Length: 79
Image (cartoon, rainbow, N blue to C red; front, side):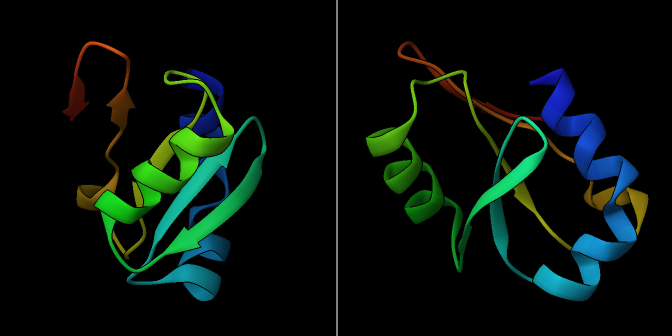
């Protein structure tokens, strides 16, 4: 998910303009889903992608909003 995270950080300003206050799902260098809440973003993404193959990110201004949500068969963890 390092690739997805760096894609988000590198395109942060554009993401804020398009998706502020939303949870986005990133696979590779592409936003593949937009949701109002994190739980729905994870549940819907797990229907399409294997755990560990997508990143859920809350979009807002500022570096304090850079987080990574890890989804695996064993646990979910957000940093």
